[in-house]
Amino acid sequence: MHKELEEFEKNLNQILEKGVDVTAEKWMAAIEEEYGKTPLIFKRMAERPDVLISHLLYKGAVTTTSSLDPKYVELISMAVGAALRCQHCTAYHMQAALKKGASREEILEVVLISGLISNSSVLANAYRIIDEKLLKCLPCTNEGVE
Image 1 (cartoon, rainbow, N blue to C red):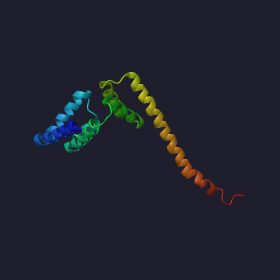
Image 2: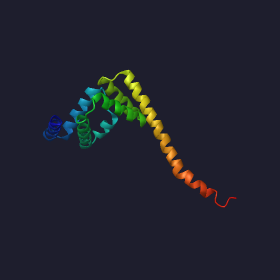
Image 3: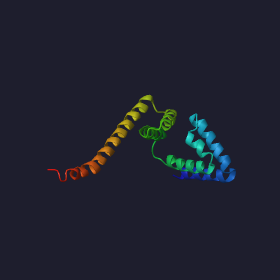
Image 4: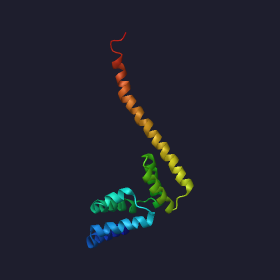
């Protein structure tokens, strides 16, 4: 944990020394270099460098302190993007997972699992609404009917 804290402090010092604008530009360039492209949300956040930097600091703190292998962090991120039907998130995190060593088979497996969970979520939500709303109202509609 000590190493992650040192990295976080190094990032904070860079922001203080270089300024928000310069730091945001450097971090955007690093993202572009590492992943081959920059997500649209980062581009829009970069219009307000303080927002971009706070987001990337948070993201970095979460991912660098994770006990999960970075490849699995990207596979999970891809699965969430797929389940949420975010084409750009799915594509970005798939590329990141591949760069971190994921195989084609792992990518396909993650898509199957995210689809399964997404489908189950739709059904569970709908059935709960039906149970809560429709079934409670059925006796009301039969009142006074002989």
